[in-house]
Image 1 (tube, rainbow, N blue to C red):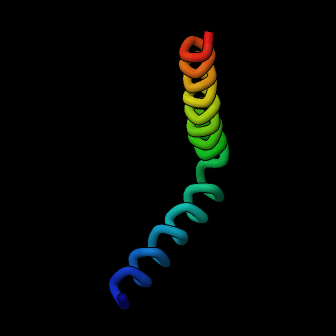
Image 2: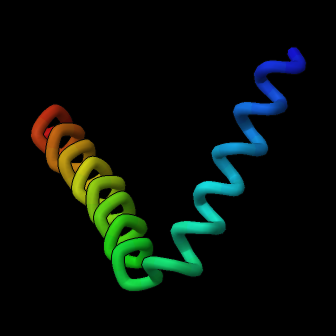
Length: 53
C-alpha cells in the first residue's frame, strides 16, 4: 500500500505542476476528456433509443 500512496502523491504533484506551467494545455486536456464523456453518453442515448423503437 505504501507504493500506491507514493504513486498517488507523484501523480497529484505532476497534475498541479502541469496546471501551473501549462494552463492552456491542461484546459484543453480537460476539455477533451469532457467532450469524450459527453460523446459517449450521446452514443449510449442513440443506442437505447434505437433499441426501444
